[in-house]
Image (cartoon, rainbow, N blue to C red; front, side):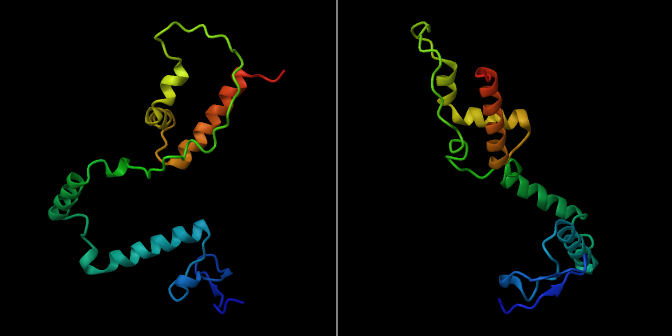
Length: 155
């Protein structure tokens, strides 16, 4: 036993064990609907305070937000960077056609794309509309599987 008593979630009325790091303050369980309700309740309590009622409405707040955005350009477009996020799931493929019919001085499409990983990530992000690396990696795996199915159909 962890020694932390189970409590009842005010939204779904189910008993749950709060997280040990937050046991004295956690009131809602981790179900998505309960978390959403907790957030709405928290916002409602925050907005009930007189000093917060016009927090986002006054002209000085508009100016404050505009200055912050100017100081942090592209903040909303940033995604966490991990240099190997898209390389991990890729599998090595054996070459089917060993004939080299390329003209001297021209690079294969694969060579040009491998040299530009940021271009590939940007292209996948543009095509799918995803900005998070996990979503882009999932889309890349799906695209790779589709490419394999097209290039190497089952016999």
